[in-house]
Image (cartoon, rainbow over all chains, first blue to last red; front, side, top):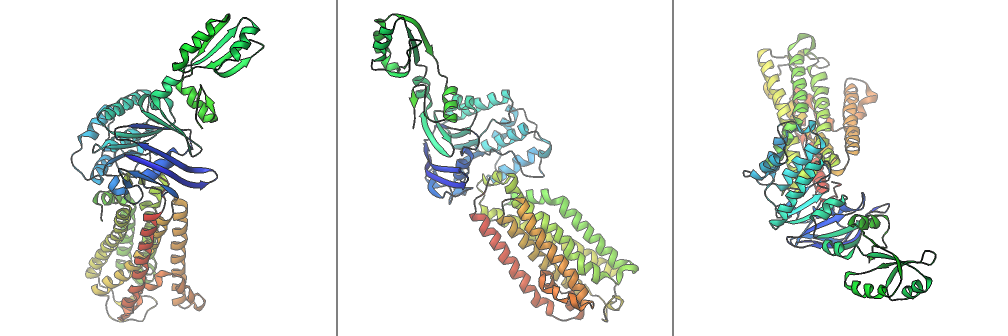
Length: 303
Length: 252
């Protein structure tokens, strides 16, 4: 549905996106995770047709995002990262304008969302708080019930209760078969919503991973302390994925895949063991590691 | 091509600026054309300067608000996230800009026509002129048409800067310099016309020279051929702004 292929746009000073490629299939939710300035919004901007790729391409539904953007916009709901709303309107006036720009018709969806987010749109947009403006923008993005949703840091500016409300809204949209691309630097919302997660850092896609797979593939660094040096040495020569072998404390840290767990238990049965400790790696730690460097962590490595 | 909802928003968000400029211009026109103290300066001061200064300020501020400022603030993203083409955005905004000027001059002209009907002006009363006869309604229409055309050209150039630049500071900066030079050179050139020889050449520095109320008052047709230049400049500048805006990368 959404296809980004080798997308490159260099803004100089190391900013921009470089050879970013990913797909979002119909009905899928892809989380676009990365720190500030990593290139999330830049990628969104190319999908929206605001910027032209220097090389590579971005398409939605087979249509070119630069040349056919007005055609694409008929199917896309977009929530900008910026909350700057057009001048001189009330909240209701803004929604009316957006509805008309989208081709009109009575829009009950926006009304429902306003009730859901408890927003009174009668005041002037200028006097609204960031959160209120964000709610208006959400209502505008979901107006006309678009098939594809591009959401750029959707929950920033919302209070925790509204964040939860928003997450349940996206879950409902997912169940209705909507295709969602959600960019965020907030870990919890990506974890709660996304089928797959693309991690971007310094303009490059570090990896695209299946959310369920990472959850499954983690939680398995096991540190075993041995009673004597002979056992330590013997175990240490075994065919495991060692993270650490510390002779002074006689401890070995091993990364054990779930499929390998039986072999591991059989192997350590023979030894005299002083301590056994399983270290759980949370998804958040996993991603924090990607933020800071991009080598290996928690037994999962992505180049 | 024309996006009605966008046009409505442009009218709403620029109504205060448009209203105040139209109000001031109309009031000044009524004052200059009705009060005995100022009637002799109606053309030197009001038609000579005010009909370019006031619309000049209006187009400087408004042209920037129509494109560059919305790109700069990010609110253009909402408009472009709908099936509205960029070319339709520029067409609508240019349409608004031109027609708001037409309306501004229309109201002011109407007021002058009414005043002139009640209290006709003899051309002999005017300072610095040696004309005879009365100021006719036709002349008022022609003078204002000539001024309007030049203001549309000024607007188009500001609109071009607004379409080319992504940030308000450059758009306003370039438009401000352009409007400032145009208006100032026009005033200096006017002194040139009134006898200060050294200032005469300033007329080559400003689009306002294509606005020729003297030719209208003298009954010549010079002003008609002079309409062609601002019209051509306006078309070219609108087209350039539109083209650049449709193709450039927007930092939204």
